[in-house]
Image (tube, helix red, strand yellow):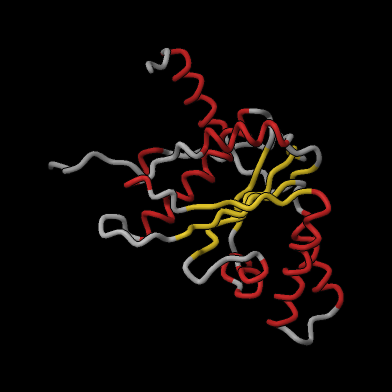
Length: 196
């Protein structure tokens, strides 16, 4: 397949405008749209076709189960946590109407180290974020303590051979037009070798 020049230009322009949206609200993308996005996003680079990933989709009332895990984690880390702290932990599960949990399911392979498998999972999550942005929605990728919490991992059915690489919080941006921070490519990219 050959991509038309204008499609490439449009895609690069879309990438240049992408931003994280820490505050999102209803509505979230529909199930039908998400199925199309998942199918496309799974085309991420994947050395040896290991498919070292799986994803949990949490939306609507099912977020209460995630909230319960966040509260339980908070209680285990601080048995004296006050009600306001526990309520804050609960609210974190309701920051978006749709949450995708990205999980790397490590496979044993001589040619594919674990870091490459985690990056492949991240590639799928990034694809999902770009695709929902292209459809007018917003997202923010979070990790933090809930990504490594044994309480949360057990509650989500994450095995000892697996790792949560991120939570993608998805919805309609509460502030869709917040300004972009400029990025200078020269701060991060250079030709090599740098001959003097």
